[in-house]
Length: 244
Image (cartoon, rainbow, N blue to C red; front, side, top):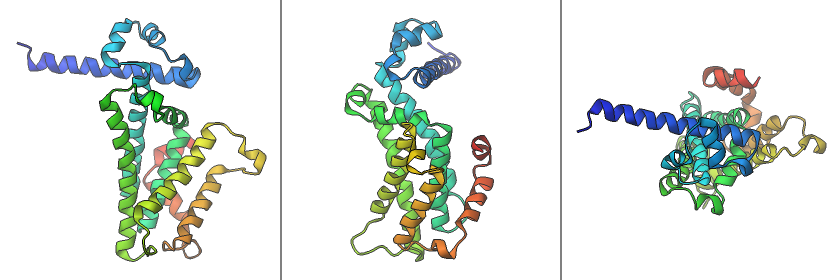
């Protein structure tokens, strides 16, 4: 009979081996791209057989989705920290938006990988468990954002027009953020169209959108630059130090 100690050690070894596989895959994706992500290349790099790799992942698509799930967990943890910021709902939502910006600047390759992972040809070849984990991670973000919007409605800072649901505003904001980061991840030279600081541009566009919805305090009545500095100092000091 396998002892609890032996079982625990075996589970730890499995987790360590999976982490090693993902680390190598992440490096290949960063340096060579998805085309060169193969089970053979990973096996050679970690000095295991391909069979060992297949014990953990069913395919290279499965590895890619697993990587995106892992990185999304880091993003979601940053979102939860942001949502816990002490301030009015719009400030807390602003902290969540800032968390997304910081995450992109620290993990720019994630957005290329995520776009691939969500495509049907790749996602369909990942395990059911990883497909479900990927979806759960995205839904978690939208649910958290929806909660902050509902908080704003509850306290009277935001009055949505008849028929407009919090999820609609959340989706609009998510589209604005994600779209910007996908463009930047694709290395489109935005400076050629006069965008010197895309992150500052994104922040201004987000504030305009929130002002348009009437989410108080409005930008002309609140110093959101000061709020941003407080968020960076109180919630994300380590991440901010890495991107400045």
